[in-house]
Amino acid sequence: GFNTTTIGALPLETAQTTNETWGFRLHDRSWKSSRRLIQELAGAAGRGANYLLNVGPRPDGTIPEPSLAQLDTIGAWMRRNGASIHGTRRGPLSPRPWGVTTQKGDTVYVHLLEGSDRVVALPTLPRRVVRASLLETGEAVTVTATPDAITLALPRRDPASPDQVIALVLGR
Image (cartoon, rainbow, N blue to C red; front, side, top):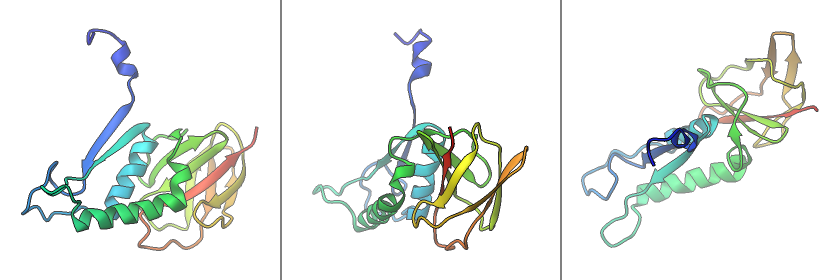
């Protein structure tokens, strides 16, 4: 029943819509940007939550063009960065002003959702970083470790990018 402690073990879920309504509404033209939806997806993954995205179909069952465009953009992003979402769990760092982390096996994915800094400092991780690269391109990222922090020297970021994902491979 609901009067047990096991309900707290259920996974978190974040539910969102592509505009402002859960169903089709002819006059709702408040379409959310694909950037925002991608950042919400990565943010949910970094918090250990599932992400449910509702698309309200028209009365004839077709999907509105703005929703199709959003889904195309999200799909393109996922083809390049999906490894940082699919099959991952919340990462070892709590959410930060710059974004979140996810983890799968020995790889920690750093999702830089905000900012354009070329250098990002992270708290130390449980194990040392043996390799770091941009997930999308494979371009190497320079890592400098001190006893108190890990510093990532990043290549220039495309300002239109909703999420710059860095893959950190941890040693054993």
